[in-house]
Image (cartoon, rainbow, N blue to C red):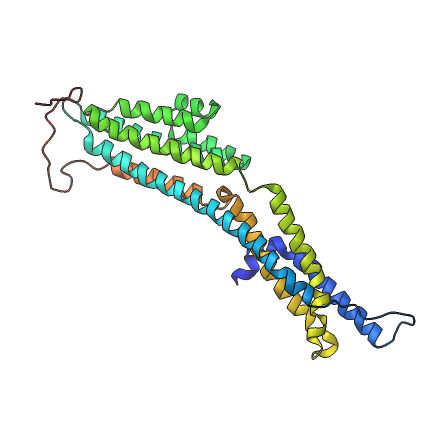
Length: 314
């Protein structure tokens, strides 16, 4: 079952075990006291449930606010990558469609469009590395050397800000395409969108939810759960020696600690988004788009006859 493989439950397992142990020890202690196994002024340990009833709305607000803010961060990160996916395909499509083949050999056209496709992929792959943990470094260098020319790969790898260097290469690839300058400006507009998605992602990476809020929420939840068995003890008087308290406490702790763990993981969206899959798909789609030619589907369009260096307003 997927529950056994869930990373959420694995991460909270120690906390759940600790809370369950408190409930188990409470049941054992109160059973010993009730059966008068120990001599002395010992009494059963339990708290009134009113304290937990009054404090639960505050705890719910803390968890709800944190979860909502964490989800907003994840959603914004996913939208940024969604824009990258859409605009990369759009850019390469326009580059292919706007390419003026007048006086250009088929081989030259293929080389120019292949360069456009690779530079587009290089940007998203550099952005992925920019937002990922250091463990991605080896794979990043390997992919750069496999797909790009040696000099270009080294320039991106050695750049202080790798995505910016990749955007520079992409801009130069666009400038090398023979087409009307107004059409070329449309391609550069897509590059501006990439700069915006990069900046938005960097903001998410460098501005997490304040640490003091996360710590206060975690501490409040831990204290509430560790004391909860004392408040629930009387509610399970109809079970043998209040034994029902143990599984009930375990289930409640799984639910609440699971919510807190979900928020913790969504706080860092770039560790859970499948960015490598995004990059691979973008690379494959871009390569496929530049392989298409006018007329290969049996339909030919009129080749542009205007010069791509001037604009005739008459």
